[in-house]
Length: 242
Image 1 (cartoon, rainbow, N blue to C red):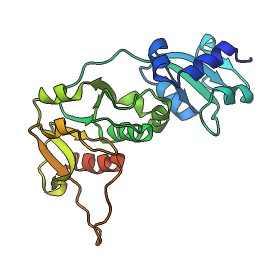
Image 2: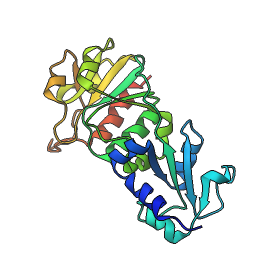
Image 3: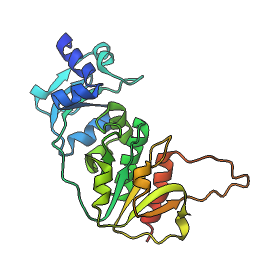
Image 4: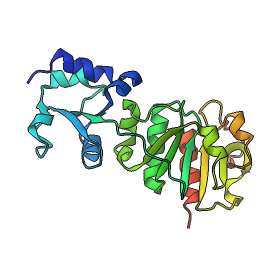
């Protein structure tokens, strides 16, 4: 079956946050990502497929299309058999237990997607994002999560008031902080990672907290900083060390 102009327009419009919010839909591509979302609590709106896959999905929500039509709605250089539209769920309440990761204005979709995967890998159930952090339903974020979006609880909040009310100790990643490897890290805590270019905002830095840093071991000590996703992986690994 051929795609209609209306369908192409809808899928294309979801590249923009305002239309994702308007229609309460987001796009996922590729067999692995779509399968992960289908196996989760996310609600399917529509699948567009070029192959006989996901045959257990009701026919009203599956539409067989051509490779040519798939390219019209795909954002991938090499489209991978399926584009899925899923409903954006209602916001969830924020958990106030365990280890929470908080993001202060992360801008890069790839970084956010990788960080969501890291939360999934390290068993961090709650990810709290400032309202200026990139939308987790941005298609580039969805693709970068490789399905982990389905297993991490993500909330967008006014970050400063949230942190002011926190009852757990707050740890802020900062280049001038205490040595990560010499710091006692509790199981109940909030870890704050900052913006790619500017780090942690001054308002959050001024909160009563513990600043931690990853020491440099290179002989020349000339590396300016680590990518925020890389730094997050290292710090989460230390928090989860038995």
